[in-house]
Length: 573
Image (cartoon, rainbow, N blue to C red; front, side, top):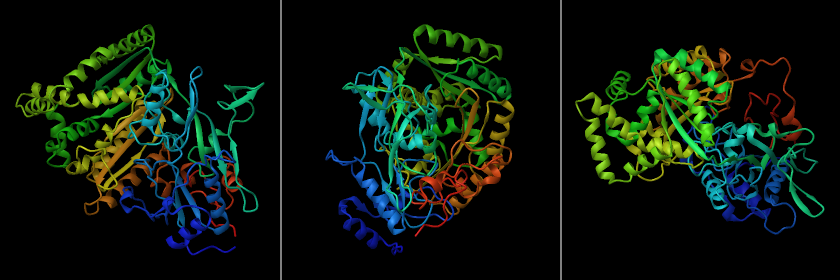
């Protein structure tokens, strides 16, 4: 069968003739394209499959039907969970002739195992939904939460190699098993199978049991940033809700960077720092201050912003993290952390349950009174008063960050991406697509090393300055050996040449980092266009997974090209 004319009406009629309802098919919202990249492609249409509740056959029969249609008619499908891959990609397809596959209707949370601590989620399950589910079911566990908004998908974040804040922050390492559908060849029906037996259900003598250990090969790694299948559900690890939680904030100066990063490497390896601690620069802090008081930012001139940073005595860098465990465990970790910090002359600030309650209480006072008090302090001619005012202005951010570290999602940090769009902020939940907010995140990685820390952050700050852009940086100690340096580029898409400058700046930084061996922790939409095999020197080629599981190139053509060298360039007919 030849390929069809890839127009909205033809594809819609094909779907209708195959049993889909008109209510499941929609046109593309052009407001959603708030992340740009060269040779941008737009989906022809969006189709939203629904789970089958008949009990006969697969729950995912409509997904399988769409795959078969794509194979037979020569179009492609670009699946997404909730479309909230902020800063890295959004939900635009990477190649032409694609229909967007909206999987948000699959919202089932199942197979929650309280004793071993795991749960199975579908693509439509959001951070907020899993949080509410766990509270409702005994409040025994928490799910590792990211700084993404409440509506962001759990599966979407895991598949794109996202990370959070708790000891289970490295999401790609916390998948027990996945159910996936691979397209296969034209003459072979799609396969629906599990990648591992770990976390799956089995029945023995009429009793339903959970497998808690894998037998045989574990194929779960196939699904991470690889366009070979559609993931219908994931079983993921949960964190036992700690008896005790204490947050810590450790400010330090540029001149203390070498000692501080080397201390972090030591503390991470010995598990004193056992969550994904974040090190944010003063530009990140200024952004938090600006969303509370937008009128402070009258110019984005580098010297003017530097004056503001000095005016409010914002620390060069701040390390933040959390201690989890029994009171005795947390007490021991705090003691170790204090001892190491004392050696380098730095004093940590610890925030326990009592202090969090006090902060919450002060914020519950009259909002007008709070705002007026802080505004008076930050406007003071007295430097100490301004410093106190800035600290008070950040109370809400501190409170929300501590919630995230304890498994409760927040929309608070979605506001910081409005750094160059402060005039568009309202009291409602931000809508960056509608507001034409530009955002790109890139995260070059290296070992936890002061030398690499200084090199990567200097490349970022110097290149951003060259393009008249700011360099908000957050370095995350993602595990005991690796840190990722996240740059958050923000701009106003309605400004002349805004896109052009931001994209050029991002590309230059990521290429410079890659040339020195610092590849990104996760692929982004834009980096897919310029990173290539030269930046991934391998003694042997990667296995031909794409051509084996998806030889017709049905799923997201051109996505993850860096690791899909063998991706199919032409549809099979």
